[in-house]
Image (cartoon, helix red, strand yellow):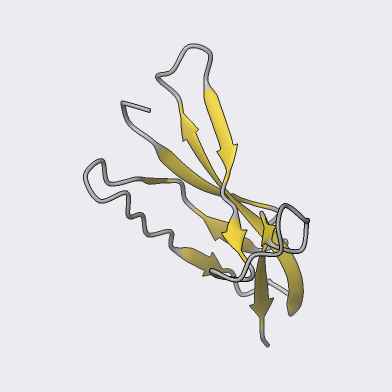
Length: 91
C-alpha cells in the first residue's frame, strides 16, 4: 500500500472523541488522542481501530487486528486474534 494512511477509531462511547491521525509512512507508527468530555459517562466496552487509504481507488479500509496469543498461536481459530480493543472510562 502506498500513499497516505489515516487511522480512525470506531465504537467510542458517547462523549469520547478521537480525531483521525496520519500514519507515519516510514515507521508505520500512529498516535490517536482520545478526549472525554465532561458529559462522558463511565464506560467499559470494545472499540475498533481502522486504517483508511483515501487516495486508493476504490477507497481502502481495513480494521486493525491484534494477536491475543503472541507467538503461541493455536492455528486459525477466532481465539488467536481480535479486531477489538477494550476501552474503560472511569468517573
